[in-house]
View 1: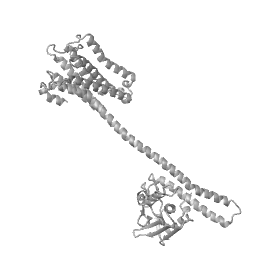
View 2: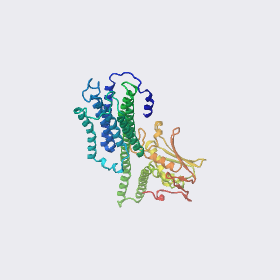
View 3: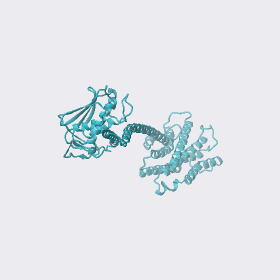
View 4: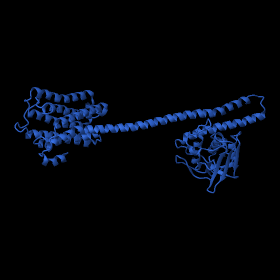
Length: 515
C-alpha cells in the first residue's frame, strides 16, 4: 500500500471518469462491511477468544458510525443539500475522526500488552469489556449530537476558502495513523502470532493510512487521488471481513472433514460391535455343544453300573471335547493378540506324522485321510500347529464334503507343505480375496462359525515364517512351514532361538498351554 501511494503521487491530480452514485455506493459498501465485521468479531470474542477481537470490533463500529454521519453530511448521499454538518469544517472533523479512531483502536487491540492483561487479566472481565465497548460506542454518538446542536463550535482545521486541511491538521492525522500502524505491526511481530485476523488487522490500519495520504493529495473530486482514497477506504473495511469469512469457510471444511471421519469411526465402532455380538453368539453356540456333551458324559460316569469299557470310551470322548474347547479358546486369544501385533510362537522340532495323528483324533466321526511322507519333521510350535491343522480340517468339514484329505510333503527349499482338500465344490473365485479376512464368511456358508479360523491360521503361519494360500486350480489350502530350525522374529521384534530337542509326541498336555 505505501508503494501504491508513492507510485500514484505524481498522478494524484489526474482526472478520472465521473461515476454517478459512486459516493452512495461507497458509503453503503463500507457501512455494510463495517457492521458485518463488528458482528463477527463480537461473536468471536464471546466464544472465548479474548478481548482483542472485541477491540477490533470497536474499531470497525467507530468507522461505521462515522460513515453514517458522513452520509448525513455529504451532498448527494442522503439529500442533495444536507443540513447536518453542512459546513466544510464539520465534515472535515467527521472525516478526521473516522480515519484516526479505527487505527488507534486497532493499535490498542494488536499491541504487545503486559502479561497481566492477557488470559486472566483485567481486560478479560465481562464488566470491563462491556464498559470499554460502551465508552467507544458512545464517542460517535456524542459527536453526532454536538454537530447537530452546535455545528460551528469545533476548532477550524480547514481553509475556509479552499476547503483543504491546514498543515497542522494534516500533520496530526498523519502522525496518529502512522504511529497506530507501526504500533500494531510491532505488536504482531513481537508476539509472533499466526492469527490471520490480527495480521490483516495491521493491513486494515495501513489501508486507513493510505486513505489519509491520498486524501491529502487530492485537489478535486473524481481524480486519481480521490478514487484511490475511497478504494483504500473500502479495503480498510473489507479486508478483515474477508479474512474472517475465509477462516470460517476453512473451519467449516475442517468440521465437515472431521464429521466425515467421525461418522466413519462411528460406523467402524458399530461394525465392531456387530462383529463382537456375532462372534459372541457363534462362540457361545460352538462352546455349548462340547460343554453339554461333557456334562452328559460326567452324569453317566456318576452311575456306578456303567461298564468300564464304556467309561473308557466316554473318557476318550471327553478328551476330544476338551481339546475342541481348548483350541477354540486359543483361536480367540490368537485373534485378540494378533490384532495388536504381539503374537508370539515357541517352535520346536516336531515329528509331523505324530502331530497329524493327534490332530485326527479330534475328529473321530470324520472321514479324514492322511498321507504323510515318512520321517518328516517341522520347525513349529506344537500348540500352534494343532490350531492350524484343526482350523483347516474343521473348515473342510463345515463348508466342504467328505472325505477330507491332508497330504504332507517336503520341498527342496527346506519347507514342509501341508495340502488340505475335500470333496466339495471348493471356494468361489470371487470370495478368494477375502478368504483370510477376519470374520469373513463366504456366500451360502453353513450356519455357525465365527469367521476367525482362517484368519487365525494365516496369522499363525506367518508368525512361523511360512505361507498359506488357496489353490484354485486343484482346490486345496496349501500351507508351507519351515522344516529346520531358523530364527523367527516375532512382530514385536524378539528373536526365538532353536532348542536342542525333538518332540515326537508333543500334544496339548506337553505344551503347558492347554486348558
